[in-house]
Image (cartoon, rainbow over all chains, first blue to last red; front, side, top):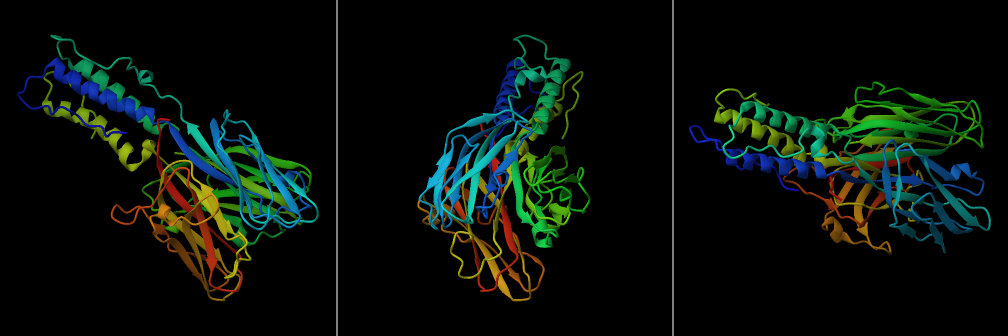
Length: 318
Length: 174
């Protein structure tokens, strides 16, 4: 990617020829096209399966995401340090089923570079299967998913610039034509800069949440870098009356968007609220090394029973 | 700088201004962020039983990165259940397919963040800032597996330790 520059220095009392103007337009158009072509971004997110036991339900071995953007899984890796009595692990929902066998306390990895595209607002569920010969508690086990996202084609022609502006030989260089062209470039560059232009997500998951969530398990910090908190999902697997609330606050402690409470729907039923919109921007001018600028995701709960699994998926753009 | 509406006899300065104005939009986005770069965060957490002899994988987090990226910042928080003094550290490294360390992928640098806990409270480490134009810059390479290793200098457990890495990446044409 090159840096844009103007090839012409316009000097007073120097003839302004169409060819000189045209070369400047051409260069600006090339720079703009180069700018608009950079449409793909890459990121990762992680699904935790650490601590799953032989008494965990099938629902506890799942994790569902529903990104608000179209996206493509370009790869995934399942990493595990095993558990006694566990002979095999597999995860579906990825581009290809990831399987691990001969699992001991030593790190084992299964990975895939296959691709799987998904439209926006479509659920993808990752499901862990465990083959065991007795009681077990999984050691460190997690799935990393690699993501590619395309912001889409922001074409030059969208902004009324089907052709690079130019003056014919002998054509009078008019202010009106030039003003129109500059305005179109202005619109294109501004719109491109503001377009949804990157995507990532994070999952904050807690298992076997006791009636009183300790303060040290409640919070996920989101340091201030230039990105937009687009929306979030809240998932709760618990008996009725055991409710999970997710609240995102800014650096001033004010709630961003709305807090979301998901009521327990039964120990065998996943309850979820997806796509709660947010929309602030963590500004690049704010220093991420200063923890006072952090946004925070905070989990709280109600009820006296254990929440088997509760998690929040936060979607970011930018 | 903003667009000047041209009229009548076009002044060279106005013409120059307008071209430079558009370039002034494109280049900051290209160089310093905005729509030509994207940012994201990787979180990592260890479990509460972390002590100085832990070696069962619970203190490790591996991730293969999908693209070249520049490390902006490293943060670490730890919660202690008591006043026992101990230091929790997280170190960034790289590993090969067997999990063997390959330090050259972090330029043989020690990329580390530590926090000293001394009470039953949350402690925040001084965040490691890699954004400086003159300081150490760490670039993660596409397709390489990087490892975060938690360690403790104490035989006393903690409540929780977690941290994050912040990255910026170039937006791509493919």
